Amino acid sequence: MFGTESSLSMFLNTLTPKFYVALTGTSSLISGLILIFEWWYFRKYGTSFIEQVSVSHLRPLLGGVDSGTPSNSNSSNGDADSNRQSVSECKVWRNPLNLFRGAEYNRYTWVTGREPLTYYDMNLSAQDHQTFFTCDSDHLRPADAIMQKAWRERNPQARISAAHEALELEDCATAYILLAEEEATTIMEAERLFKQALKAGEGCYRRSQQLQHHGTQYEAQHRRDTNVLVYIKRRLAMCSRKLGRTREAVKMMRDLCVFQLMKEFPLLSMFNIHENLLESLLELQNYADVQAVLAKYDDISLPKSATICYTAALLKARAVSDKFSPEAASRRGLSTAEMNAVEAIHRAVEFNPHVPKYLLEMKSLILPPEHILKRGDSEAIAYAFFHLQHWKRVEGALNLLHCTWEGTFRMIPYPLEKGHLFYPYPICTETADRELLPTVFHEVSVYPKKELPFFILFTAGLCSFTAMLALLTHQFPELMGVFAKAFLSTLFAPLNFLMEKVESILPSSLWHQLTRI
Image 1 (cartoon, rainbow, N blue to C red):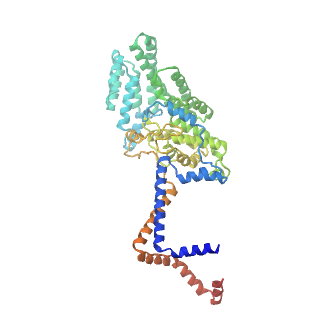
Image 2 (image 1 turned 45 degrees about the vertical axis):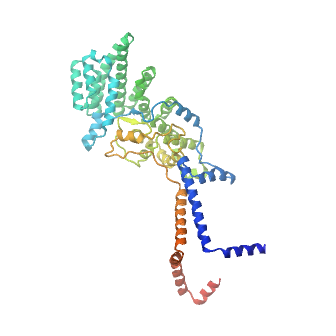
Image 3 (image 1 turned 45 degrees about the horizontal axis):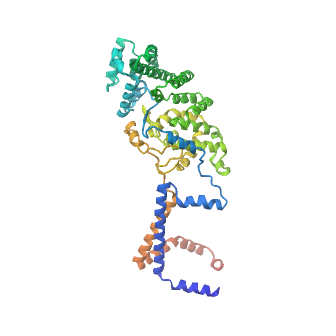
Protein backbone atom coordinates (compact mmCIF):
# COMPACT_ATOMS: atom_id res chain seq x y z
CA MET A 1 0.00 0.00 0.00
CA PHE A 2 2.84 2.37 0.95
CA GLY A 3 4.66 1.52 -2.30
CA THR A 4 1.59 2.32 -4.38
CA GLU A 5 1.24 5.73 -2.74
CA SER A 6 4.91 6.48 -3.35
CA SER A 7 4.63 5.51 -7.02
CA LEU A 8 1.58 7.69 -7.41
CA SER A 9 3.32 10.65 -5.74
CA MET A 10 6.41 10.22 -7.92
CA PHE A 11 4.22 10.06 -11.06
CA LEU A 12 2.38 13.28 -10.19
CA ASN A 13 5.67 15.10 -9.45
CA THR A 14 7.12 14.16 -12.83
CA LEU A 15 4.18 15.59 -14.81
CA THR A 16 5.07 18.77 -16.70
CA PRO A 17 2.81 21.75 -17.56
CA LYS A 18 2.73 20.52 -21.14
CA PHE A 19 0.99 17.38 -19.94
CA TYR A 20 -1.79 19.43 -18.36
CA VAL A 21 -2.10 21.48 -21.54
CA ALA A 22 -2.39 18.29 -23.59
CA LEU A 23 -4.89 16.88 -21.10
CA THR A 24 -7.02 20.01 -21.39
CA GLY A 25 -6.84 19.90 -25.18
CA THR A 26 -7.79 16.22 -25.25
CA SER A 27 -10.76 16.81 -22.97
CA SER A 28 -11.83 19.67 -25.21
CA LEU A 29 -11.61 17.39 -28.25
CA ILE A 30 -13.68 14.70 -26.56
CA SER A 31 -16.23 17.31 -25.45
CA GLY A 32 -16.43 18.58 -29.02
CA LEU A 33 -17.07 15.07 -30.36
CA ILE A 34 -19.78 14.56 -27.75
CA LEU A 35 -21.30 17.90 -28.71
CA ILE A 36 -21.33 16.99 -32.42
CA PHE A 37 -22.96 13.63 -31.66
CA GLU A 38 -25.53 15.27 -29.37
CA TRP A 39 -26.40 17.84 -32.04
CA TRP A 40 -26.80 15.16 -34.71
CA TYR A 41 -28.94 13.04 -32.42
CA PHE A 42 -31.14 16.01 -31.52
CA ARG A 43 -31.61 16.99 -35.16
CA LYS A 44 -32.70 13.45 -36.02
CA TYR A 45 -34.74 12.42 -32.97
CA GLY A 46 -35.63 15.69 -31.26
CA THR A 47 -34.13 14.85 -27.85
CA SER A 48 -30.78 14.71 -26.09
CA PHE A 49 -29.10 11.27 -26.19
CA ILE A 50 -27.63 11.62 -22.70
CA GLU A 51 -30.96 12.78 -21.27
CA GLN A 52 -32.78 9.93 -22.98
CA VAL A 53 -30.31 7.31 -21.71
CA SER A 54 -30.45 8.68 -18.18
CA VAL A 55 -34.27 8.73 -18.17
CA SER A 56 -34.85 5.46 -20.01
CA HIS A 57 -32.10 3.24 -18.55
CA LEU A 58 -30.49 4.73 -15.46
CA ARG A 59 -33.63 6.04 -13.78
CA PRO A 60 -35.45 2.68 -13.74
CA LEU A 61 -32.32 1.06 -12.24
CA LEU A 62 -32.36 3.64 -9.48
CA GLY A 63 -36.03 2.98 -8.76
CA GLY A 64 -37.54 5.96 -10.61
CA VAL A 65 -40.72 5.91 -12.65
CA ASP A 66 -40.78 7.46 -16.08
CA SER A 67 -43.88 9.60 -16.22
CA GLY A 68 -42.85 11.72 -19.17
CA THR A 69 -43.29 9.13 -21.88
CA PRO A 70 -46.42 9.91 -23.93
CA SER A 71 -49.13 7.32 -24.04
CA ASN A 72 -49.42 5.21 -27.15
CA SER A 73 -53.05 4.29 -26.62
CA ASN A 74 -54.06 6.09 -29.76
CA SER A 75 -51.14 4.96 -31.90
CA SER A 76 -53.24 2.46 -33.78
CA ASN A 77 -55.78 5.15 -34.57
CA GLY A 78 -52.98 7.45 -35.68
CA ASP A 79 -51.57 4.81 -38.01
CA ALA A 80 -54.97 4.20 -39.52
CA ASP A 81 -55.53 7.92 -39.85
CA SER A 82 -52.24 8.43 -41.70
CA ASN A 83 -53.02 5.52 -43.98
CA ARG A 84 -56.52 6.65 -44.82
CA GLN A 85 -55.77 10.33 -45.24
CA SER A 86 -56.01 10.79 -48.97
CA VAL A 87 -56.25 14.57 -49.15
CA SER A 88 -53.34 16.66 -50.32
CA GLU A 89 -50.95 17.99 -47.68
CA CYS A 90 -51.72 21.61 -48.46
CA LYS A 91 -55.33 21.29 -49.62
CA VAL A 92 -57.18 24.56 -48.99
CA TRP A 93 -60.65 24.22 -47.47
CA ARG A 94 -63.53 26.67 -47.37
CA ASN A 95 -63.90 28.12 -43.88
CA PRO A 96 -67.15 26.69 -42.44
CA LEU A 97 -67.62 29.81 -40.30
CA ASN A 98 -66.64 32.43 -42.85
CA LEU A 99 -68.03 35.90 -42.28
CA PHE A 100 -70.29 37.95 -44.56
CA ARG A 101 -68.44 40.28 -46.91
CA GLY A 102 -70.94 43.11 -46.87
CA ALA A 103 -72.06 42.97 -43.25
CA GLU A 104 -68.72 42.11 -41.59
CA TYR A 105 -65.61 42.23 -43.78
CA ASN A 106 -66.59 45.52 -45.47
CA ARG A 107 -67.42 47.12 -42.11
CA TYR A 108 -63.90 46.32 -40.96
CA THR A 109 -62.54 48.00 -44.09
CA TRP A 110 -64.68 51.10 -43.49
CA VAL A 111 -63.43 51.43 -39.90
CA THR A 112 -59.73 50.59 -40.32
CA GLY A 113 -59.06 51.19 -43.99
CA ARG A 114 -57.48 47.74 -44.25
CA GLU A 115 -58.47 44.91 -46.53
CA PRO A 116 -59.06 41.79 -44.41
CA LEU A 117 -59.12 39.43 -47.40
CA THR A 118 -56.27 38.75 -49.77
CA TYR A 119 -56.69 38.54 -53.51
CA TYR A 120 -55.78 34.87 -53.45
CA ASP A 121 -58.49 34.16 -50.87
CA MET A 122 -61.17 36.03 -52.84
CA ASN A 123 -60.07 34.33 -56.05
CA LEU A 124 -60.59 30.95 -54.39
CA SER A 125 -64.07 32.07 -53.33
CA ALA A 126 -64.87 33.05 -56.91
CA GLN A 127 -63.87 29.58 -58.04
CA ASP A 128 -66.03 28.03 -55.32
CA HIS A 129 -69.04 30.08 -56.38
CA GLN A 130 -68.64 28.99 -59.97
CA THR A 131 -68.44 25.38 -58.81
CA PHE A 132 -71.39 25.57 -56.40
CA PHE A 133 -73.79 27.84 -58.26
CA THR A 134 -73.28 27.20 -61.99
CA CYS A 135 -73.74 24.29 -64.39
CA ASP A 136 -73.60 23.62 -68.12
CA SER A 137 -77.36 24.23 -68.60
CA ASP A 138 -77.30 27.82 -67.35
CA HIS A 139 -77.70 29.14 -70.88
CA LEU A 140 -81.25 27.74 -70.88
CA ARG A 141 -82.31 30.27 -68.22
CA PRO A 142 -81.45 33.94 -68.90
CA ALA A 143 -81.05 34.86 -65.25
CA ASP A 144 -78.64 31.98 -64.61
CA ALA A 145 -76.65 32.95 -67.71
CA ILE A 146 -76.21 36.47 -66.29
CA MET A 147 -75.17 35.08 -62.90
CA GLN A 148 -72.67 32.77 -64.54
CA LYS A 149 -70.88 35.86 -65.82
CA ALA A 150 -71.39 37.68 -62.51
CA TRP A 151 -69.47 35.07 -60.50
CA ARG A 152 -66.47 35.61 -62.79
CA GLU A 153 -66.43 39.39 -62.31
CA ARG A 154 -63.59 40.74 -60.18
CA ASN A 155 -65.20 44.11 -59.52
CA PRO A 156 -67.71 43.89 -56.61
CA GLN A 157 -69.94 46.61 -58.05
CA ALA A 158 -70.11 44.78 -61.38
CA ARG A 159 -71.20 41.61 -59.59
CA ILE A 160 -73.88 43.44 -57.64
CA SER A 161 -75.18 45.18 -60.78
CA ALA A 162 -75.37 41.84 -62.59
CA ALA A 163 -77.34 40.33 -59.68
CA HIS A 164 -79.90 43.15 -59.86
CA GLU A 165 -80.13 42.65 -63.61
CA ALA A 166 -80.83 38.94 -63.12
CA LEU A 167 -83.58 39.69 -60.56
CA GLU A 168 -85.30 41.94 -63.07
CA LEU A 169 -85.83 38.89 -65.28
CA GLU A 170 -86.99 36.41 -62.61
CA ASP A 171 -86.57 35.36 -58.98
CA CYS A 172 -83.03 33.98 -59.09
CA ALA A 173 -81.76 32.28 -55.94
CA THR A 174 -78.06 32.82 -56.73
CA ALA A 175 -78.68 36.53 -57.36
CA TYR A 176 -80.19 36.87 -53.90
CA ILE A 177 -77.18 34.98 -52.49
CA LEU A 178 -74.73 37.42 -54.05
CA LEU A 179 -76.64 40.44 -52.75
CA ALA A 180 -76.92 38.94 -49.27
CA GLU A 181 -73.22 38.21 -49.16
CA GLU A 182 -71.85 41.43 -50.66
CA GLU A 183 -74.44 44.23 -50.72
CA ALA A 184 -76.24 43.75 -47.39
CA THR A 185 -74.62 45.90 -44.70
CA THR A 186 -76.27 44.19 -41.70
CA ILE A 187 -76.95 40.59 -40.71
CA MET A 188 -80.69 41.28 -40.58
CA GLU A 189 -80.68 42.55 -44.15
CA ALA A 190 -78.63 39.53 -45.25
CA GLU A 191 -81.14 37.22 -43.54
CA ARG A 192 -84.02 38.88 -45.37
CA LEU A 193 -82.31 38.34 -48.72
CA PHE A 194 -81.46 34.74 -47.89
CA LYS A 195 -85.10 34.04 -47.06
CA GLN A 196 -86.04 35.31 -50.51
CA ALA A 197 -83.28 33.14 -51.95
CA LEU A 198 -84.65 30.14 -50.04
CA LYS A 199 -88.11 30.59 -51.53
CA ALA A 200 -86.69 30.77 -55.07
CA GLY A 201 -84.21 27.97 -54.46
CA GLU A 202 -86.80 25.53 -53.14
CA GLY A 203 -88.90 26.04 -56.28
CA CYS A 204 -85.92 25.32 -58.55
CA TYR A 205 -84.96 22.31 -56.44
CA ARG A 206 -88.44 20.73 -56.71
CA ARG A 207 -88.54 21.22 -60.47
CA SER A 208 -85.07 19.79 -61.06
CA GLN A 209 -85.73 16.89 -58.70
CA GLN A 210 -88.54 15.67 -60.94
CA LEU A 211 -86.32 15.80 -64.03
CA GLN A 212 -82.98 14.62 -62.61
CA HIS A 213 -83.22 11.12 -64.15
CA HIS A 214 -84.00 12.37 -67.65
CA GLY A 215 -80.38 12.86 -68.64
CA THR A 216 -76.95 14.04 -67.50
CA GLN A 217 -77.87 17.67 -68.19
CA TYR A 218 -80.82 17.55 -65.79
CA GLU A 219 -78.76 15.63 -63.24
CA ALA A 220 -76.10 18.37 -63.25
CA GLN A 221 -78.81 20.99 -62.86
CA HIS A 222 -80.29 19.12 -59.89
CA ARG A 223 -76.85 18.86 -58.30
CA ARG A 224 -76.37 22.62 -58.69
CA ASP A 225 -79.83 23.34 -57.20
CA THR A 226 -79.02 21.05 -54.27
CA ASN A 227 -75.79 22.93 -53.58
CA VAL A 228 -77.64 26.24 -53.75
CA LEU A 229 -80.34 25.06 -51.34
CA VAL A 230 -77.83 23.69 -48.79
CA TYR A 231 -75.74 26.87 -48.99
CA ILE A 232 -78.79 29.09 -48.38
CA LYS A 233 -80.01 27.07 -45.40
CA ARG A 234 -76.53 27.01 -43.87
CA ARG A 235 -76.17 30.80 -44.17
CA LEU A 236 -79.64 31.30 -42.76
CA ALA A 237 -78.65 29.16 -39.78
CA MET A 238 -75.52 31.29 -39.36
CA CYS A 239 -77.65 34.45 -39.47
CA SER A 240 -79.83 33.05 -36.69
CA ARG A 241 -76.71 32.21 -34.67
CA LYS A 242 -75.31 35.73 -35.09
CA LEU A 243 -78.64 37.31 -34.17
CA GLY A 244 -78.86 35.34 -30.92
CA ARG A 245 -81.41 32.73 -31.96
CA THR A 246 -79.03 29.89 -31.22
CA ARG A 247 -81.59 27.14 -30.62
CA GLU A 248 -83.21 27.89 -33.95
CA ALA A 249 -79.78 27.77 -35.59
CA VAL A 250 -79.03 24.39 -33.98
CA LYS A 251 -82.27 22.93 -35.32
CA MET A 252 -81.52 24.13 -38.85
CA MET A 253 -77.97 22.80 -38.68
CA ARG A 254 -79.13 19.39 -37.47
CA ASP A 255 -81.54 19.17 -40.40
CA LEU A 256 -78.73 20.13 -42.75
CA CYS A 257 -76.43 17.45 -41.32
CA VAL A 258 -79.11 14.82 -41.90
CA PHE A 259 -79.69 16.14 -45.42
CA GLN A 260 -75.95 16.11 -46.11
CA LEU A 261 -75.66 12.48 -44.96
CA MET A 262 -78.62 11.45 -47.12
CA LYS A 263 -77.24 13.04 -50.29
CA GLU A 264 -74.19 11.59 -52.01
CA PHE A 265 -73.03 14.70 -53.83
CA PRO A 266 -69.30 15.17 -53.04
CA LEU A 267 -69.52 18.97 -52.86
CA LEU A 268 -71.81 18.82 -49.82
CA SER A 269 -68.97 17.46 -47.71
CA MET A 270 -67.02 20.68 -48.33
CA PHE A 271 -69.49 22.69 -46.25
CA ASN A 272 -68.52 20.91 -42.98
CA ILE A 273 -71.83 21.86 -41.38
CA HIS A 274 -71.04 19.78 -38.29
CA GLU A 275 -68.44 22.40 -37.31
CA ASN A 276 -71.14 25.09 -37.33
CA LEU A 277 -73.27 22.76 -35.20
CA LEU A 278 -70.47 22.20 -32.68
CA GLU A 279 -69.91 25.93 -32.22
CA SER A 280 -73.63 26.58 -31.67
CA LEU A 281 -73.96 23.71 -29.18
CA LEU A 282 -70.99 25.06 -27.24
CA GLU A 283 -72.72 28.43 -27.09
CA LEU A 284 -75.73 26.70 -25.51
CA GLN A 285 -73.31 24.84 -23.16
CA ASN A 286 -74.97 21.62 -24.29
CA TYR A 287 -71.87 19.53 -23.75
CA ALA A 288 -73.63 16.17 -23.96
CA ASP A 289 -74.80 16.91 -27.50
CA VAL A 290 -71.32 18.22 -28.35
CA GLN A 291 -69.88 14.88 -27.27
CA ALA A 292 -72.46 13.05 -29.38
CA VAL A 293 -71.55 15.08 -32.47
CA LEU A 294 -67.84 14.47 -31.86
CA ALA A 295 -68.46 10.73 -31.54
CA LYS A 296 -70.08 10.79 -34.97
CA TYR A 297 -67.58 12.95 -36.82
CA ASP A 298 -64.28 12.36 -34.99
CA ASP A 299 -63.71 9.17 -36.93
CA ILE A 300 -60.36 7.94 -38.22
CA SER A 301 -61.71 7.76 -41.78
CA LEU A 302 -62.65 11.46 -41.86
CA PRO A 303 -60.28 14.43 -42.30
CA LYS A 304 -59.53 16.03 -38.95
CA SER A 305 -59.78 19.71 -38.15
CA ALA A 306 -58.81 22.04 -35.32
CA THR A 307 -62.48 22.30 -34.36
CA ILE A 308 -62.72 18.53 -33.88
CA CYS A 309 -59.43 18.10 -32.02
CA TYR A 310 -59.60 21.16 -29.76
CA THR A 311 -63.30 20.70 -28.94
CA ALA A 312 -62.52 17.15 -27.82
CA ALA A 313 -59.66 18.56 -25.70
CA LEU A 314 -62.01 21.18 -24.23
CA LEU A 315 -64.51 18.53 -23.13
CA LYS A 316 -61.77 16.43 -21.52
CA ALA A 317 -60.29 19.51 -19.83
CA ARG A 318 -63.73 20.57 -18.56
CA ALA A 319 -63.86 17.44 -16.37
CA VAL A 320 -60.72 18.38 -14.39
CA SER A 321 -59.81 22.02 -15.11
CA ASP A 322 -61.74 23.61 -12.24
CA LYS A 323 -59.63 21.76 -9.63
CA PHE A 324 -56.38 21.39 -11.56
CA SER A 325 -53.23 22.70 -9.92
CA PRO A 326 -49.78 22.19 -11.44
CA GLU A 327 -48.13 22.15 -7.99
CA ALA A 328 -50.50 19.47 -6.69
CA ALA A 329 -50.17 17.46 -9.90
CA SER A 330 -46.37 17.52 -9.65
CA ARG A 331 -46.53 16.21 -6.06
CA ARG A 332 -49.09 13.43 -6.43
CA GLY A 333 -48.90 12.77 -10.18
CA LEU A 334 -51.68 13.03 -12.75
CA SER A 335 -54.97 11.25 -12.18
CA THR A 336 -56.60 9.21 -14.93
CA ALA A 337 -58.95 12.04 -15.90
CA GLU A 338 -56.11 14.57 -15.91
CA MET A 339 -53.98 12.25 -18.03
CA ASN A 340 -56.84 11.92 -20.52
CA ALA A 341 -57.13 15.70 -20.70
CA VAL A 342 -53.39 16.11 -21.22
CA GLU A 343 -53.40 13.45 -23.94
CA ALA A 344 -56.32 15.21 -25.66
CA ILE A 345 -54.39 18.49 -25.56
CA HIS A 346 -51.32 16.68 -26.90
CA ARG A 347 -53.41 15.33 -29.78
CA ALA A 348 -54.79 18.78 -30.58
CA VAL A 349 -51.41 20.49 -30.37
CA GLU A 350 -49.85 17.92 -32.68
CA PHE A 351 -52.61 18.50 -35.22
CA ASN A 352 -52.33 22.31 -35.14
CA PRO A 353 -49.61 23.81 -32.91
CA HIS A 354 -50.57 27.41 -33.75
CA VAL A 355 -53.90 27.44 -31.87
CA PRO A 356 -52.70 27.71 -28.23
CA LYS A 357 -51.03 31.10 -28.70
CA TYR A 358 -54.33 32.56 -29.95
CA LEU A 359 -56.42 30.91 -27.23
CA LEU A 360 -53.99 32.12 -24.56
CA GLU A 361 -54.01 35.58 -26.20
CA MET A 362 -50.24 35.50 -26.65
CA LYS A 363 -50.83 36.61 -30.24
CA SER A 364 -53.40 39.07 -31.61
CA LEU A 365 -56.39 37.75 -33.52
CA ILE A 366 -57.50 39.07 -36.91
CA LEU A 367 -60.63 38.44 -38.94
CA PRO A 368 -60.55 34.86 -40.25
CA PRO A 369 -60.15 34.34 -44.01
CA GLU A 370 -62.76 32.74 -46.24
CA HIS A 371 -60.48 29.75 -46.78
CA ILE A 372 -58.28 27.89 -44.34
CA LEU A 373 -55.36 25.55 -44.55
CA LYS A 374 -55.80 22.67 -42.14
CA ARG A 375 -53.03 22.53 -39.54
CA GLY A 376 -51.93 26.03 -40.59
CA ASP A 377 -52.08 29.50 -39.09
CA SER A 378 -55.23 30.34 -41.06
CA GLU A 379 -57.13 27.46 -39.43
CA ALA A 380 -55.83 28.48 -35.99
CA ILE A 381 -57.15 32.01 -36.47
CA ALA A 382 -60.53 30.78 -37.71
CA TYR A 383 -60.90 28.40 -34.77
CA ALA A 384 -59.78 30.81 -32.04
CA PHE A 385 -61.89 33.66 -33.45
CA PHE A 386 -65.11 31.73 -32.77
CA HIS A 387 -64.12 29.37 -29.94
CA LEU A 388 -62.07 31.53 -27.58
CA GLN A 389 -65.23 32.50 -25.69
CA HIS A 390 -66.10 28.84 -25.16
CA TRP A 391 -62.69 28.13 -23.61
CA LYS A 392 -63.04 31.16 -21.35
CA ARG A 393 -66.46 29.97 -20.23
CA VAL A 394 -65.05 26.68 -18.88
CA GLU A 395 -63.36 27.50 -15.57
CA GLY A 396 -59.68 26.62 -15.56
CA ALA A 397 -59.58 25.28 -19.13
CA LEU A 398 -57.16 27.95 -20.36
CA ASN A 399 -55.03 27.45 -17.26
CA LEU A 400 -54.75 23.73 -18.00
CA LEU A 401 -53.90 24.50 -21.62
CA HIS A 402 -51.28 27.02 -20.52
CA CYS A 403 -49.65 24.50 -18.15
CA THR A 404 -49.55 21.59 -20.58
CA TRP A 405 -49.38 22.69 -24.20
CA GLU A 406 -45.66 23.50 -24.30
CA GLY A 407 -44.79 20.23 -22.60
CA THR A 408 -46.95 18.24 -24.96
CA PHE A 409 -45.47 20.09 -27.91
CA ARG A 410 -42.00 18.95 -26.86
CA MET A 411 -43.22 15.34 -27.08
CA ILE A 412 -44.29 15.71 -30.71
CA PRO A 413 -41.99 13.65 -32.95
CA TYR A 414 -39.23 15.65 -34.55
CA PRO A 415 -38.17 16.42 -37.28
CA LEU A 416 -41.24 17.22 -39.33
CA GLU A 417 -40.95 14.08 -41.43
CA LYS A 418 -42.14 12.07 -38.43
CA GLY A 419 -45.65 11.79 -37.04
CA HIS A 420 -47.16 10.27 -33.92
CA LEU A 421 -50.94 10.60 -33.94
CA PHE A 422 -51.38 12.29 -37.32
CA TYR A 423 -49.83 12.52 -40.71
CA PRO A 424 -46.49 14.42 -40.58
CA TYR A 425 -46.91 18.16 -40.38
CA PRO A 426 -46.83 19.65 -43.93
CA ILE A 427 -43.82 21.85 -44.57
CA CYS A 428 -45.67 23.95 -47.17
CA THR A 429 -48.22 25.51 -44.80
CA GLU A 430 -46.27 28.73 -44.30
CA THR A 431 -46.25 29.52 -48.02
CA ALA A 432 -49.98 28.87 -48.40
CA ASP A 433 -50.84 30.86 -45.26
CA ARG A 434 -48.95 33.86 -46.58
CA GLU A 435 -51.27 33.80 -49.59
CA LEU A 436 -54.42 33.42 -47.46
CA LEU A 437 -53.62 35.90 -44.68
CA PRO A 438 -52.96 39.66 -44.96
CA THR A 439 -49.27 39.82 -44.07
CA VAL A 440 -49.38 43.64 -44.13
CA PHE A 441 -50.76 43.76 -40.57
CA HIS A 442 -50.44 40.14 -39.47
CA GLU A 443 -47.31 38.10 -38.81
CA VAL A 444 -47.88 34.60 -40.12
CA SER A 445 -47.12 31.89 -37.58
CA VAL A 446 -44.71 29.20 -38.65
CA TYR A 447 -44.27 25.74 -37.20
CA PRO A 448 -42.89 26.35 -33.67
CA LYS A 449 -39.26 25.36 -33.56
CA LYS A 450 -38.03 23.25 -30.69
CA GLU A 451 -35.46 24.97 -28.51
CA LEU A 452 -32.10 23.32 -27.88
CA PRO A 453 -31.85 21.50 -24.53
CA PHE A 454 -29.81 23.25 -21.86
CA PHE A 455 -27.33 20.36 -21.77
CA ILE A 456 -26.33 20.90 -25.40
CA LEU A 457 -25.88 24.66 -24.91
CA PHE A 458 -23.88 24.14 -21.71
CA THR A 459 -21.65 21.52 -23.36
CA ALA A 460 -21.03 23.80 -26.32
CA GLY A 461 -20.02 26.69 -24.10
CA LEU A 462 -17.81 24.58 -21.85
CA CYS A 463 -16.14 22.89 -24.82
CA SER A 464 -15.40 26.20 -26.53
CA PHE A 465 -14.08 27.79 -23.33
CA THR A 466 -11.73 24.95 -22.41
CA ALA A 467 -10.46 24.64 -25.97
CA MET A 468 -9.65 28.35 -26.05
CA LEU A 469 -7.84 28.16 -22.68
CA ALA A 470 -5.80 25.17 -23.84
CA LEU A 471 -4.76 26.90 -27.04
CA LEU A 472 -3.80 30.16 -25.33
CA THR A 473 -1.90 28.37 -22.55
CA HIS A 474 0.09 26.37 -25.09
CA GLN A 475 0.96 29.40 -27.19
CA PHE A 476 1.51 32.00 -24.43
CA PRO A 477 2.24 30.17 -21.15
CA GLU A 478 3.85 33.14 -19.33
CA LEU A 479 1.21 35.64 -20.41
CA MET A 480 -1.60 33.23 -19.44
CA GLY A 481 0.08 32.80 -16.05
CA VAL A 482 -0.04 36.55 -15.52
CA PHE A 483 -3.66 36.64 -16.56
CA ALA A 484 -4.49 33.73 -14.26
CA LYS A 485 -2.85 35.48 -11.27
CA ALA A 486 -4.65 38.72 -12.09
CA PHE A 487 -7.95 36.89 -12.44
CA LEU A 488 -7.55 35.06 -9.12
CA SER A 489 -6.47 38.23 -7.31
CA THR A 490 -9.48 40.08 -8.71
CA LEU A 491 -11.76 37.17 -7.78
CA PHE A 492 -10.50 37.08 -4.18
CA ALA A 493 -10.20 40.87 -3.78
CA PRO A 494 -13.67 41.25 -2.17
CA LEU A 495 -12.89 38.41 0.22
CA ASN A 496 -9.52 39.93 1.18
CA PHE A 497 -11.16 43.32 1.68
CA LEU A 498 -13.78 41.74 3.94
CA MET A 499 -11.11 39.92 5.94
CA GLU A 500 -9.17 43.15 6.46
CA LYS A 501 -12.29 44.90 7.73
CA VAL A 502 -13.05 42.07 10.13
CA GLU A 503 -9.45 42.08 11.35
CA SER A 504 -9.56 45.81 11.98
CA ILE A 505 -12.81 45.59 13.92
CA LEU A 506 -12.16 42.51 16.07
CA PRO A 507 -9.57 42.58 18.86
CA SER A 508 -6.18 41.17 17.87
CA SER A 509 -6.27 38.47 20.54
CA LEU A 510 -9.71 37.23 19.44
CA TRP A 511 -8.71 37.32 15.79
CA HIS A 512 -5.55 35.37 16.64
CA GLN A 513 -7.59 32.65 18.35
CA LEU A 514 -10.03 32.46 15.39
CA THR A 515 -7.20 32.10 12.89
CA ARG A 516 -5.70 29.29 14.99
CA ILE A 517 -9.07 27.49 14.98
